[in-house]
Structure formats: C-alpha cells, structure tokens
Length: 297
Image 1 (cartoon, rainbow, N blue to C red):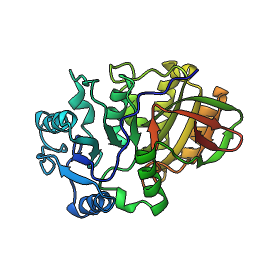
Image 2 (tube, rainbow, N blue to C red):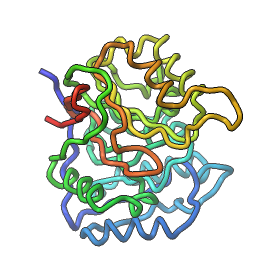
Image 3 (cartoon, helix red, strand yellow):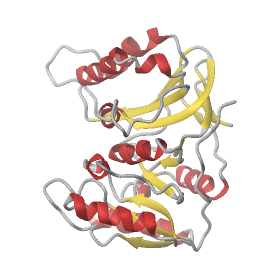
C-alpha cells in the first residue's frame, strides 16, 4: 500500500496565512495586491513578511533576512499556510543547514523556484501544494482558483486532463517540480525519494537543447529507473534560438522520455504562462498514459 505524506491541517476562513518572498525580489505591487485580495475575499487573514519588499541583487533581501521571514512564519502557531510571493531564484540558499520542525505542519504554497521548499519539506514526509504564487494568482481562471481553495479546505481535488503520451496506468506519490530547479537539487539533502514516485515537470525560457541536456542528466543519474510515471505540464517560451537548426521542445520531450516505457502524459494545465492548476505534493495519484488523465486517490 502506498502511504501518502502527512497532510497539514485543512484551512478554513478566518485562518492566518503569511506571505513571504523566499526567492526573487518583488517586481510590482499591483499583482501582489490582487493576489492578497483573492485570499481576503475568501475570508483569510493575510500577513506579509517584514522583508517582502527588500532587494539584494536578484534576491528579495539577504539570505538571513529571507530565512528570518520563513522561520517566523513556520514557527508562528497562528499561521496555517505560507504563500510564496513570487519565484525567481534563491529558495535553495535558505535551506543550507536548515531543518524543519516536524512537530509543526502547515501548507507551503508556490511553484517554479519554490520547488526547493516543496521538495525539502517532502524529505520529512510533509505534503505541500505546487500552485500559483501570490503574484500570479489573479491571472488564473476562476475554476483553477476555486480548485486550489477547494483542496486546501476539503482535501479533495478534481482530476486533470492532458494529452496521452505513452500507454499504461500507474499509481504513485506525486512530486511536482520545475525541471531546472529540480535538477540542481538531485543528490542533495533537498531531494526527496523518487522510489515509486510520479514526477510532474514544467519549465520556462529554456532552449530545447537545454531541456535535452537536463533530461539526459536525469537519465544518466538513473532517476527515471526509480519513478513510475511522468506528468508533463507547460514548457513555455522554450522555442529554439532564432535562426538555428533545432528540434522543437515537443520533439525533445518525445525523444528523451518515450523510450522509458513508463506511463507518460503531455500538456497538463500547470506551469508558467497559462493555467497553473494546483498539484498536491506527496499525495497518491494515478496517471493514465492512454487517456491523459491525472487523478487523485
């Protein structure tokens, strides 16, 4: 029997959620305010980390300040969820010599660079949510926003429809990730176990040959020998460099993944630059390569 990760307590209106910037610095306040408004309209109290407006190079402040905000949110007994304000880069820098207090379980919500936090939490068998960051939430269609809150409040979530890739059906633990971020976590203390996992991957602004290079490294490290299936989201702005001879991103994904002989689904609605449907980290899912459906137990 496959055992899911521990689920944090479900949310309810009136709960306190804290918004922090563990990675890149805030670009504009407009998208942030719209994201906060959505949470508030649902009845939640939203508190911003004290360093959320900081900027240190491409980071949202020095490591110690960003880590301080994360520590404060994680240790606050009133706080029931931690929402990343945006992605960018820098989350993994906070996790050197970091340990989670496992007597506490609360939601961490985000995607892209926030993969580092989601995977780190997965190493101690605590579930989280791969979902829009606060500054992208308002750009989501209503059904995706409702779907995210339904899951956070009820623990139930509807299936997602993609395109069939490789035949077969399999069940395993879902581990979503940004491909580029994930590859830099392999064989580090932040990498969760892949044994019996179904990996969900997306990426943005990477040339096809770079995606090829990353998937080839995953292959050479033997990662795909451990996992049971691959669920692919959107690989946006991953067109070839203009004027060069190249495979398309779709051709690279087929070439590097279809010979693995495990269930494979394309074009699920998650990732950058479009619908980013929530994906529970560490929960049991079924992936059907014949129908293109990703469903939850």
